[in-house]
Amino acid sequence: MLTNGRLKIAIQKNGRLSEESHALLRGIGLDYDTRSRQLFALCRKLPVEIIFLRDDDIPEYVQDGICQLGIVGQNQVAETSADVDERLQLDFGKCRLSLAVKTDSSYSYVADLNGKKIATSYPTILRSYLAKENCDAELITINGSVEVCPALGVADAIADLVSTGTTLKNNQLRVIADIFKSQSVLISSRRNLNANQSQLIEKLVCRIKAYTNAQSSKYIMMNVKKQQLSTILKLLPSLQAPTIVPLGDEKSVAVHSVISRRDTWELAENLQANGASGILITNIEKLLP
Ligand code: PRT
Ligand code: ZN
Image 1 (cartoon, rainbow, N blue to C red):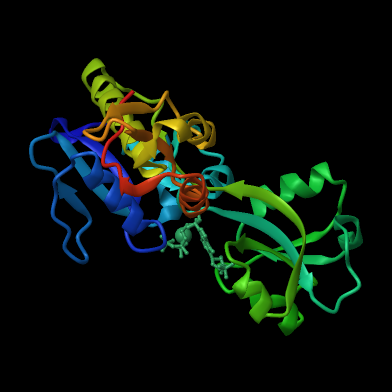
Image 2: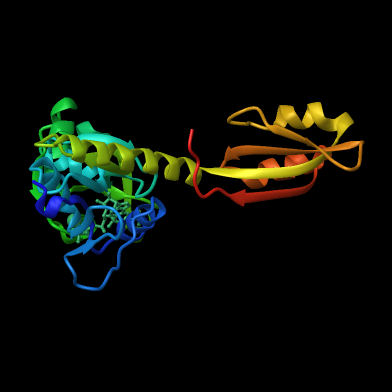
């Protein structure tokens, strides 16, 4: 349903995904104001409305066509078994749902949890995992602070989201299995989309692809003596053939290329050690194919 002809995009109101969701929406040209405690924000220029929700509710709002697009973790999509299209992986909010036990416990494998109690906020994902592993454990569904359950004697193990591992370490817990890998995704509704809505969704999807491509890439420029050019080109893991620009100095050229955001320090040091100079690495704002 589209009230006032506006496309509705659901994002997390207040939590780990909020900041990057706003950055992404603003990065694709959506212009809106955010004030605390407001439930929605209208965009200028495009017929789009941003709806702020708890992350748990986003998959169902999109499934039911109340919102046409949503940004949420794959963990929530899987847990709610929502009937939505996963359109794009957004490369933030990365975590995994892991099975963990007390560091000093004797359990090492999923099979060791047969007949034991496991506390989790993700009973659907956990239940289907245990069924596949033929493990008959008792599930205790808890909302929040799952990590304290083993110390309190409430459960023998937990299944919780892990990002850096700090929370597990602080609670003297260790992972025995990873159940589910998650990151934020763009989901879209399968219900009642008319031609205008579908067209606007496709436009926004293209913009998000350009934004996420830009976020995962950097632009590198450097000067290279012609006799070192072939060595330098071999070191560049370019997405496309690098651009080679003549310089006033006839012995050198400038090399420009798009590279992956990862390991830029390693690459720059390697290029420098092989004769590149004046190495400049910059962010890319948009990267359209
Ligand atoms: O109020 P609302 O319901 O919207 O928010 P929430 O409190 O349920 O969710 P929030 O903001 O904590 O997380 C939103 C989403 O972020 C999750 O659904 C995941 O998709 C993603 N995400 C990524 C995480 C984490 N990393 C994460 N580390 N969600 C939660 N955690 C928690 C985890 O539960 C544990 O308590 O962080 C702790 C572990 O982190 P580390 O770094 O110590 O390992
Ligand atoms: Zn939540």
